[in-house]
Length: 309
Image (cartoon, rainbow, N blue to C red):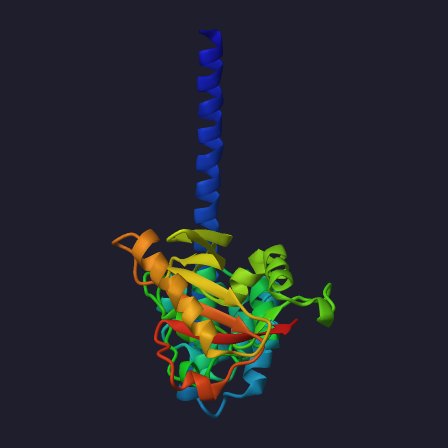
């Protein structure tokens, strides 16, 4: 009986701590939202100063304002900070979607210098859907994630809410960066490529794009009296579907697509649930072939290549 009471007390203590963690997290989110909105409003007032009092407005206004605000409120209001806030308002006249998507001012410092609207929106969606930290966002920008999308996908990218969905096939990058430093060219085969991916699976999930979760490798399936093995199997929560990945260390062949479609059809018929969407496939090869691809039906398949990072 005494032990049961101790367990109850322990449970109560854990509940108190966990509730405090939740409250702190909520306060931190609210604090970040307040900072974003505050800086947006400051930027708005600076822009209004230019529009309504053009004679007195200029870089000298921002410099003098910076000096005054820094004396009153401390760091965070330098000349560079205020110019950034002004640019923030000009780029995003409505900051509501950013606040709802939990974009922080730290994120925005990296987003604001990006001149292309589609590129900015792409990284905002990436932050939103993958909960990217500042460091992870920096890595995505450094690795030219946007530039590795196909030209069609780069056009007219809109900011998507937490509840909104994206066609993940369109957002698979080409090439995919995989760290193969430990391998020599003569050792690179499909098994070695798969091993390299599994060793850095968390990085690879981000490299794939939005909403991917790892299910398993060498997924064993039985067709008739024969066993087959799917290289990599994922599930995408954004698309609510399984994702079959096949690895090839040689140039694309038409037979590769047939093998991938075979595995996709198996998953659809034998594994996926009625509430899941149809399976999609990704073929990662050394080099694609547009002459082959134009004769293939690729609405559920993405052909991409790999490159040593």
